[in-house]
Image (cartoon, rainbow over all chains, first blue to last red; front, side, top):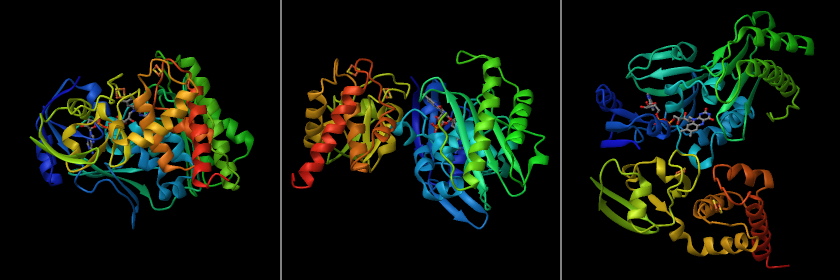
Length: 273
Length: 157
Ligand SMILES: Cc1cc2nc3c(=O)[nH]c(=O)nc-3n(C[C@H](O)[C@H](O)[C@H](O)COP(=O)(O)OP(=O)(O)OC[C@H]3O[C@@H](n4cnc5c(N)ncnc54)[C@H](O)[C@@H]3O)c2cc1C
Ligand code: FES
Ligand code: FES
């Protein structure tokens, strides 16, 4: 069980940042991962009182505060308009409602967990991470950075919503960690596909330029799925073998792409993995 | 440090250790319905309401509920008793250990949604694990409760 010596509710981001520079101290998101991953924390820094729990439309796009919970992401209407059922599909299987009422977007992105449904979806959506000191960093770059002591204040989604978004995951049981995750975003000028839980960290597929900005037929969908299966590195763990995951890469990519193009026709069904 | 909160409708202040979990604080206050199960945020046994929203009390510091409302099953007597009758009528409980957390979350669902579908019930309660029952009896109990409530509210036509 985690031992926490002291607790400080930060009055400003600067105060939280300064406290977070001390080695033994830790920022609190929802604390769900922190509780399992660390034995002791000197000072737990609460940034819950800094207004970072909102999902807002701004001139630059949709801005989600770091303390937004996974449950907010699941229910927020602006996000449903932006991404159809993809947000609900991506987070709705994470443990349970009571868990998702606590777990935060900031903690999920900072963690850059291999199994992360959240990272997979936000990568495909071309999100940017807003850091208190460092400023804005594309999530695809942030995902590769080492863990540091900066604070994620927000995630920013581009102003132009994709034409269609779809999310698929495979799980051994409904609320288990995913065995594989896949998110597709069809934009007017790009096609983005992220694959995660490989079991390594989610990555964006390259080599999709020629498919950008147009409808894809079934043959092309199969071609992309095959390309994904041959280029995405997979590995084995207790949930599944590399070979099984590679098979899933192909299946989930094809399904997610089909979901996207069905959705573009206005008759898209939500994914049932 | 000093913690002020409203617990089951009663405002109170207590001196607490900064690192104490809400679960331990609540049990220390005599709310024994709040159970420690997995303690890895997986089972839902420790579910309580924080400002009416169900959360896992094993995974939140008591210090974080400063100034807020916390409700346990002890604070929901009538609402809980009504639903419990329907769950019991289906023989849905065996050891009963999961029951308080399950009741809390079922009540949260039934407050949010008048008539959830079977799929919605299953999805909402997916974070409440029960090692004995197989969930079907609990589901039948909730559906029967919804029917009863509908009739009661509609003036039992
Ligand atoms: C039992 C269990 C099952 C899970 N299953 C899944 C799953 O199936 N799919 C999935 O996608 N995820 C899953 N997760 C991960 C979960 O969804 C969250 O991503 C995770 O708990 C981290 O979020 P948190 O709010 O709890 O962060 P915390 O645990 O509070 O923090 C995690 C780390 O991030 C740091 N941090 C927090 N906020 C910030 C910030 N704003 N800026 C910088 N650093 C910050 C903390 O200091 C800490 O080091 C699971 C977690 C658990 C415990
Ligand atoms: S004891 Fe809290 S989720 Fe199991
Ligand atoms: S009745 Fe025994 S755990 Fe649910």
